[in-house]
Image (tube, rainbow over all chains, first blue to last red; front, side, top):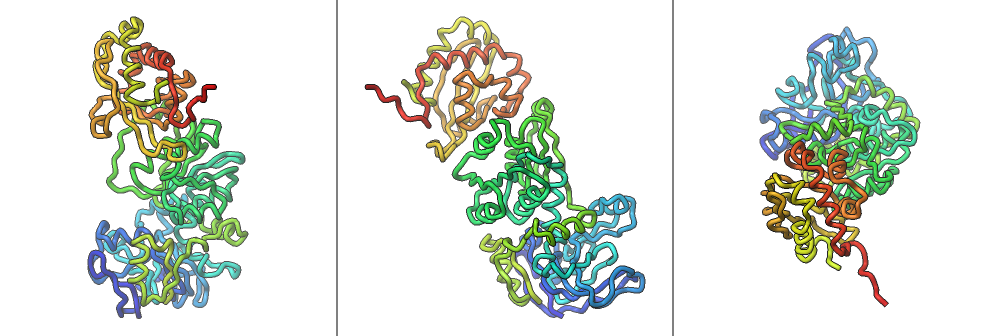
Length: 346
Length: 144
């Protein structure tokens, strides 16, 4: 079968690889209908996260179950499913309380040794371990191109908004208007935010969030602190969702939140450090919440229901649909920010 | 009227500080320059950050001038805020120490030291009101 294969820093190609097999009785093999390129795939491409040449890549996919192992109870061949970007065991203490991203056997598809050695989803077929946990049925009303987002970015945004415990009438600021920020905007509106202010530097991204209902602030044209203060009687936002994952974005989130407000940090961090005036944080009564990796399994049914109801719609994010064979072009477009989201069709 | 901030405004301000017995007493043991960053508000006519430094030493202002970011970053205390927050300070609408505790003004440096000199800080604010000031984002007054 064909799959996207990492060849070295900055180089991917589509190559013939062995078809996946059922390796564990709980496995399912899914024939991929649509997969996509995620921002975290670029970390592998750029060598920030280790991947060995020859390993396959990708973790966002929707498709149809092809085969199942004997212990899979909830799915059968022919079922249309979305795959979770977090591969959890489903049975450990953390999984049982819904914190599946903290699973004792946390893995990712297409993430090399970092993700437990599982093959990637940018392929014609993908093996999904613990299928009863890591697959979700897709209802008839949800097209593949939308449903795929439930397995990763859309649920990540919805979860971030939920962690903000947004109350009706509240103002939410979202720092970063990329795919996660976009999903946070929709999630915040779906969860009752009165107003969502989205802050970014890129006009194309801001246009997308504005169309989704956000009050878009271009930080190169307007001071975000001033813009948020103007809209909140000088106080700041009740809830801020940081959806970038950089020290300046974290600082911006603290800057625009009101005293006693909540900061939800969903951007991905690795080795960044910040200087913290703890006395100021304490005096301001700021409640900072790190989401970590989204526990998709605990939230994706709610996300799917919101998608079916039309309150969440990731389709504006899709800028390119390419055949799987053109994945290298997709990486080039996405890596150079000429694409917001690239779908790959096997 | 002097444009706020500018070297002209800062010269007048320095003279006001050095003419204040209240400041001299309240800051008698203060040692160290304080940098101020007026963060850009492009839509209000402030396209870039503006930096200034007050060199304050034992109740005296030894120097006050606009600086480059590189010079400003050497100050042991650095306070940042958008321009509109500084206007609130100069107009007496925002207490600077409260502003720092509330996150409206962001301090790099030892907050505890600044808080110990709250009287000196308040006097510095009080003295800004004695400088005839024109704000960058407001049109000059038309005399008739």
